[in-house]
Figure 1 (cartoon, rainbow, N blue to C red):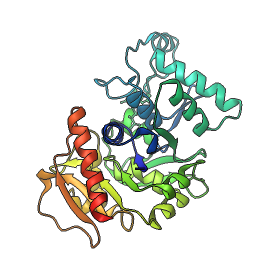
Figure 2 (figure 1 turned 90 degrees about the horizontal axis):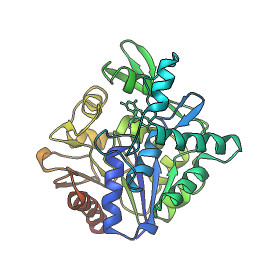
Figure 3 (figure 1 turned 60 degrees about the vertical axis):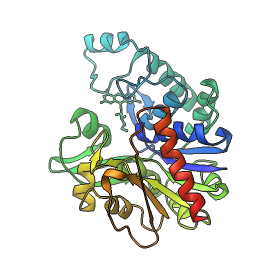
Figure 4 (figure 1 turned 45 degrees about the vertical axis):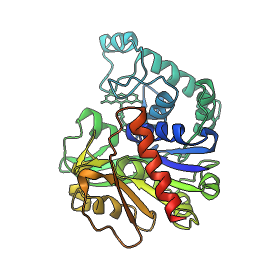
Length: 308
Ligand code: FO1
């Protein structure tokens, strides 16, 4: 089967890992959020793309939840000593990836091609594509003014309540090469258990991608990032409450109007009525190990098979 997956960082990456145990990896294309991207020291950081590369490539620091395993921090410490701002931390090994990316971008290689090359180096069999090679940045409106995504998320520890999000550059951004084609060729479109607003939202803000999904002829299944109305990690629950009016599966589904045919959500969130045309699939969605990741992936595949 050919699967096109929309993914943010950690939750989406775990879902992709489960999918790789359930289907032939060469059939999977992951379309990654780039709204979290930022420049640090002139380097281009693409956290969700890198979380996918590191997680699927077996290079992720699973305890910290971001960055590379076996990390040291000597460059950061030296930079701090010399007065640099280091609130957004890049470990030494991660810095190596970023030097290679900077050099390649300066040579004119697009982010999608660089990502494909890095994936090959890490022995990754699935295709990982940034949603776009163009500049697309998430801005968050809060009671304390508008903040860039990482200023809000890391520097302000996602504490200021979110009143709205904006995707700068989305109007003109084109889907990266292969993205629309992967969606059109898929037997199943899956939206991973990532934050609907700031992880999946920027991907869907690229009109070509939204349209490719809207006009699908195959099932599209989303996995809710909430368990019992709570986010496993991060601010998704608070954002759903503020921006969608609640934390039930129906609120998650409301973020994907016209874009999904089924919603996989946790058993702890039972007894809901979803919008017309969205089939409810309740299962255990907590992904703590290979078996549970695979189960969530299989629930999505089965939901799609039942819809076909
Ligand atoms: N998250 C933090 O909380 N603090 C950091 O210093 C930090 C650095 C960082 C560097 C590279 C990278 O790929 C991710 C990093 N993250 C850090 C995580 C990142 O902010 C979030 O994972 C995503 O943007 C939200 O999905």
